[in-house]
Length: 124
Image 1 (cartoon, rainbow, N blue to C red):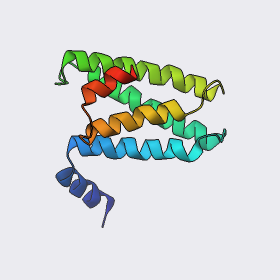
Image 2: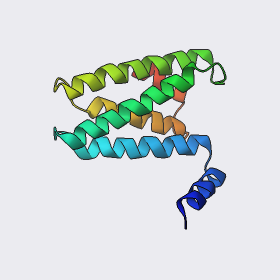
Image 3: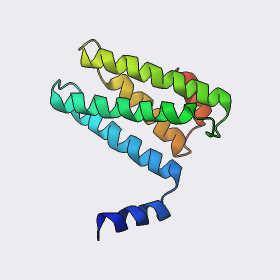
Image 4: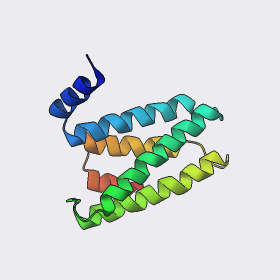
């Protein structure tokens, strides 16, 4: 199957929420695999996670985003925290555990396991 056919099939069968969950799962897995092991792989995983959150922050800032304003504000605040914490991880001041925990809380919300508004309130 060609890449284009795969992407088309994915678009048809996956909801945006499922796509976000899958992306968070991939990034979080990369973070877990590099936890405690400073080096290029950890840098790449932290950078990927940071870029994911920056993309979410840009989407949340878009006027067309239909999430409630208070939820958008809390998620943007969380994205800013992820950016600051990521910089600390890369400087060796923090480990990736908190980033993993935040991502897992978001994944739980996306999977419907918890109220995402409550999770973001607790994480921020």
